[in-house]
Length: 299
Image 1 (spheres, rainbow, N blue to C red):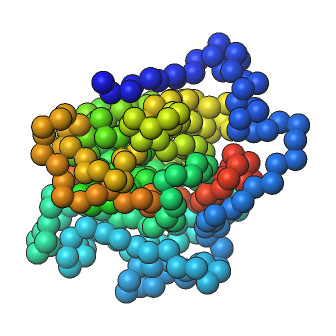
Image 2 (cartoon, rainbow, N blue to C red; image 1 turned 120 degrees about the vertical axis):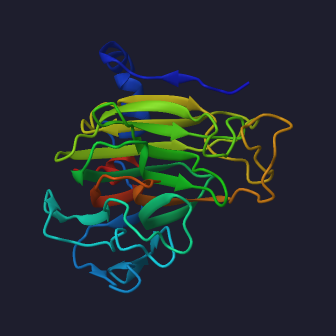
Image 3 (cartoon, one colour; image 1 turned 180 degrees about the vertical axis):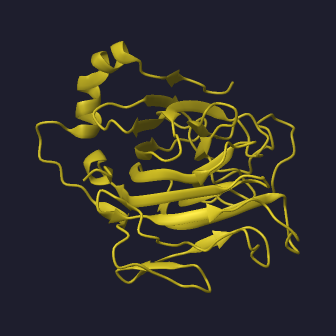
């Protein structure tokens, strides 16, 4: 049976759990040394106008997109003077799907920046500021951040803008029980609203966990208010890299011949089906750290 344990904290739950979260994540009253595994400040960046790769402090962050050749409506990353708390923002934008469609086309538009890759055996805090700029009301789900585990699987963790909800956003989680197909029923974790024009700050903590292994996984999300989480979910997060994943998580369903990767790759940027709307996103002060404080985009 799918492990769907979920705790979405209301006001009373936050008060009751405050001490636990402080100890587990904030470590209030202690000196906490954070390891920073990846950090994009946006300062002094160069963006290759051919490849789209971004370079900061000698480190390169790869740009990826869908369609070959790259469609004219799928833009290269850019910086246009938009900032968050003094941090220059990186623009990742898909304009309304145009024509002709590229030679290789799978019905989706995608512009992503690769942030980092980490072993899925390790827990991490991921922090960033995000703003939807010129962003129309979506006609279908649009993914804006993902933690990916290899072809051909849907990401085991991702952040989505939900259509028909006035820009509500949610985390989606997948594992061996849900299945790895994009149409498989994901686990949905609401995390608030992401209205265009307003900066949103996030810290996402994840402890990966395979189905059937000892212990439990966790996804905790802070959104705008870094003093308390908007969601704290426990269950299986990610795919077991030693076995293929069923299409829909049901025994007897088709399996991919590919094993899931033993690492997660983190991407930012809009990704979804062809659409008639503009999808402009900005990201700033992106950090991956060993503590909540180290990942907090307000730092």
